[in-house]
Length: 107
Image 1 (cartoon, rainbow, N blue to C red):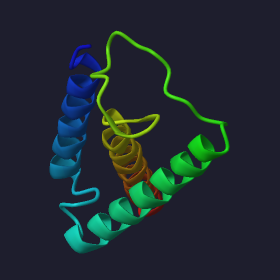
Image 2: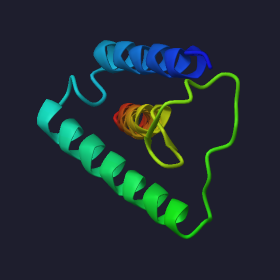
Image 3: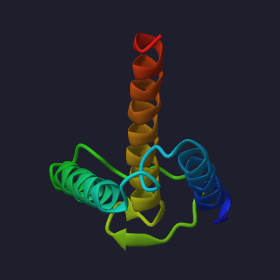
């Protein structure tokens, strides 16, 4: 039982914040919109995870890198952090690509 996976997720989220800050991609462009999108997507993914757990499709595997703390049966504490990271990364990538395409088209 370690904090390695959770720590890596937190560091990666901090890296996403730095990219967002540098290029105004999500929260630094429109905080309310990004917050609403991230919150709704994390909730949707958690509902998806819970339905997968209930049907027996998903289960928490054993890993020496995870804390072992569960917020619900088979739902590790790391899952909301991962889902937030996944959503934030997607928003940053979409915003970044959109900005590049706009810049290329304006030339």
